[in-house]
Image (cartoon, rainbow, N blue to C red; front, top):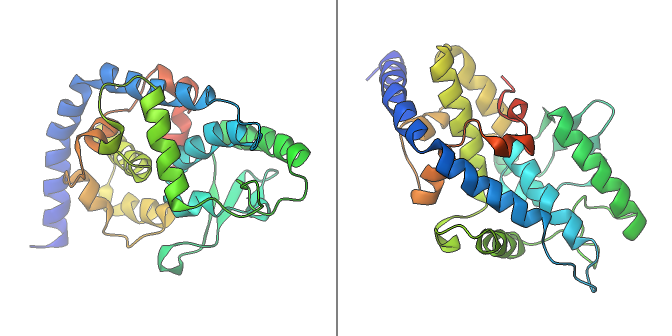
Length: 239
């Protein structure tokens, strides 16, 4: 089957997928709004005073930029250029280092967090630094994600979703928007692939409905909502 045939099938299928996703938009938007609201109200920890500031920012940054969990965990302060509004991803899968433009509201959020972090933990190297100065682990990020999902009050079990689903959501929302706008996938897909740091053909898998679970599918339905007041719609409109 030719590349053009794949594109045609994907664009045709996207029409039906977009219609299906839109049917449950309000419900899923509320789930995500509840999740991020839970991150905003994460309990204070006396032995880790920076934690309550890290959690609201780390998941929003991952979601807004479509980052892999390890990429957002391993970010260093030196990777941020607040003046240019960019972050540099230097420890990426397949060694695909890249410099990413970031939505201005997310940049402002990160800048505010950094000022607080410098007060609590001056001289820290990792942007999201643990109390001993190291980067947080994969297990920590997953556990905090599950904890916030449980605190959110969403009915779906937290075990059915993982931090990586925020990245899937970024890719799928971008592709769905392109389908809605009639964009030329063949022309635009390389940009999305470069931004996300993977083999350029991989975005097909998002549009073709390859998913890990129902919560991931639920996250894919978030295209516009009141939640985007916290994570602005522009963060899904980079291309």
